[in-house]
Amino acid sequence: MKDPSLISPSEIPLMEMLTRFFKDPLTQMKILPLLFNNAASVLRRFTKSIPVMQFFDKLTSTYCYTTMEETPAIMAVTMFVENHRSGSYYIHGSTQIYVGKLEKAIEKYGGSLAYGTDIVALDIDGGSITAARCADGSKIEADYFIYSGTVWNLYQKLLPAGKVPPALLKKAADTVPTPSSIVLYATVKKEAFPQDIGPIEMLVQDTDALTESEITLYIPTIDDPSLNEPGYHSILAIGPSFRTWPSPESLAKGDGMLRAAYEQAKNEEAERIINYLASYFPDFKANLVDWEIGSPVTIERYSLKNKGSVAGPKQMVGQDLMHRQHAETRWKNLLCCGESTTMGTGTPAVVISGLSAADVILRREGLPEYRYFSDKGYVQYLKSPAPAYAGDGLRKIGNLCLWCEHDACRQVCPHDMDIRGMFRRFYSENLEGARNLVKYSADCTDELVCLQCEKKPCVKACRKKAILGEAVPIPEVLAELFSPMRHREPS
View 1 (cartoon, helix red, strand yellow):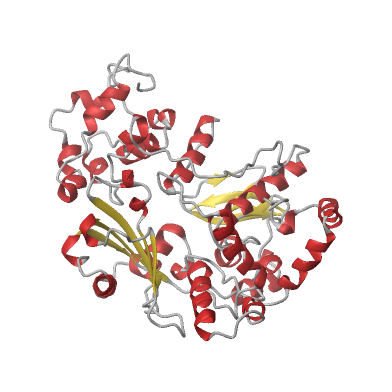
View 2 (tube, helix red, strand yellow):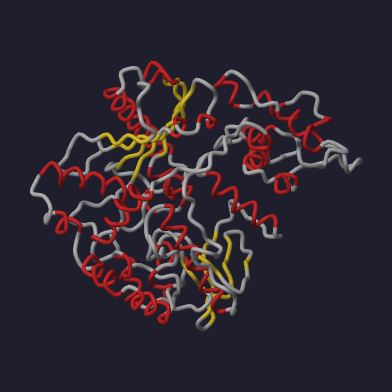
């Protein structure tokens, strides 16, 4: 920890790498063997206990879907030492805070986000990307393009086949993915669990292999009660799914029989996971308030993770670290970040991959790069979490909304206002971004259209009322924040 690195090894300039080596050559030499051995071979030097080996097998399979035999030793060091020595914290306010803060920064400095825009191809001229082509026929041009998706989608779908070297196509095709995943999202009463339950519970029955009974249960409301109403928990239960699932494209064709079979499979999987959780927590089913199931198809439809492989390529020996996609590509203005790249799976690793892609651009433009320094620098470690509960202000207002997948409030709004998008921005304290979505009367540019809407169809359609008994007071909230003479931060 005396010299933390917040840049992918593949993007560290040669002189900086040499400086690091000569600064502490003994440590660097000790690390080298970890690059070429698996975690099991290292652990066997210290124990012959089969239960101990199985325990670490389950830790690695939960973190990155690999066994100790598959896991590179250097990867195991990252998982076990970093998470348990330095501490592993989930940000208060949920991981939405990461997304919301990034969105807020982009909008604050004049950028825009084109949600729901399908990019179908990248145009190439010589050694550069000239444009990203959208499904509607439009094009997006830029000096640089940063891609954060999977290697399979990049080389097999977006880039023209004739422009990609056969070796790259083969490497992408041969890359082994992590298993498909299925996720149960639910709201339960607090009585569903014993009082001493932890925020993360790893439920394992088969210690010899990765099976569908390996479920990781996340209960973020234990650490941050503001994520749900008083007396309730939000949960997320995720595990592998070995069913054969249809592709999103095949479902989109409108085959009624295929759709019916798919919905039945989802319900069967939901029932399996709910019963499995109930086998550990007898009061679970009686206190289950609402649930939704995210199949591998759902995961691919929303995140473009092929076949619902949530962790991208396996972090196994042979396709780890430097064997993965680097930030720089053979096209000089196309850069990559995300879990398919050098740093691989997990929020900290993916964040570092994003910093690395930014550093490449800054380096090319002759600007200071992002680094960690003990006395100065843009990137800093937090010594301990700083709780920021949604107790007041904009975050509390944003927390009123469930941000439903199907936002019925917008669908019935006669003015088609993105209500969910506004409340999500309130949660990230992004009032300016939310204001860009507000609509005002055509004959009075400073009067909110909600003030002219007497029937309040958005409130009647609010799904929160069906789940928790009380709808979000949408018009009142928007009127408080955006009505005439109130264009200011709330007190």
